[in-house]
Image (cartoon, rainbow, N blue to C red; front, side):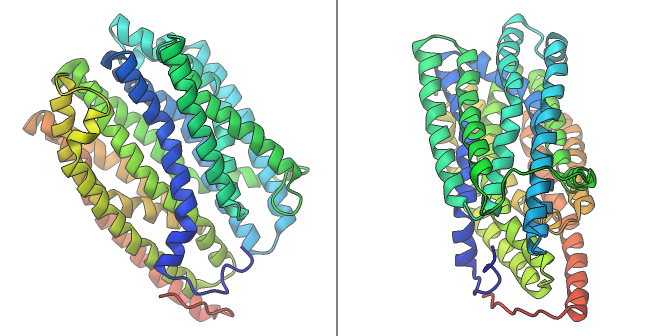
Length: 456
């Protein structure tokens, strides 16, 4: 990162710098999608529906990990921008240890009450209950290793090791596919095999990442942890938006499951599962772009290069508009191709998912704007505004339209609720970004840039 502010940064250059992080998040999302494809084709669509029943609880545990990774890594980036490398390593060591211990405790509490939790998630019939419980028992058990994976991923980008992170994602992703095939198809473990296949990817990251940061003395590395617990509180507060996003996603997915069960039964839950997997994949592109651009924004902010930071933010949104248009075209015009990956055209789930994805695809025109807006505020250490954006987008507006539209438009109202929420959210994003722009102009007058990298 030491030379990041001394070169010209264009849209092409920023895209090049974020390619590995985008690829990393896309392949990471494919872990779950590959599981679902194997389950729907080699078990049944009830098992696919059970995966979506389980999703809110998985998202709950993941929320802790993303809070530590996003909030902690933004904090570390700012420290690096201030040239405090050794302190950044001490903070990193504390964040990793605290996060891992936290997930062990949370996982233990969940496993002790798993049956009651699965029933509360909506798995009323015996088939959905058994599938969801079997899957969750393994995923929750191994979730502490997942938190290591997502922290290590983001820190590798901060440490200028994006290619290494990308290679690890490829290796763990291929391993996930291979083990899914072995456990599900060859061993006949069913949905448990899908869970263990995903866990293999976690273990690869946890083992290699721990070894790497133990030996990486030239950059960020494990050392004696910082004694200042305010590192944890600042990381938690700064990563609150990611926590809010995931918790809100957990609640809205639960509500989506409830509504689709009400309007279309188990087939409706399977259909919304397919649609949400498509959303998961496309959103990972935006989140990957956010992870790749966040250290650059945070470094520029920490180095008081405010004009540079302002122009960088503009480039981010320029690229987001392009991503959004491509995603919409793929999901709208290729909805039948996407659905065909999960079920055959003669399956009753097929027409539900194909039609639903066409309506849902309009959300991809708008969601990237809010994701990147939230990330901008996280990157500069303003976790409060980032959390507000995430909370309004994923929770308030989504639940509002899920409550209003289905009674009016039936099942179509469910498919259109999230696009409507994303559209309304843009007004809030614009308001927050305008205020940030004015703040940056005032700071640039107070702290004129010593470096003046050109941005085109």
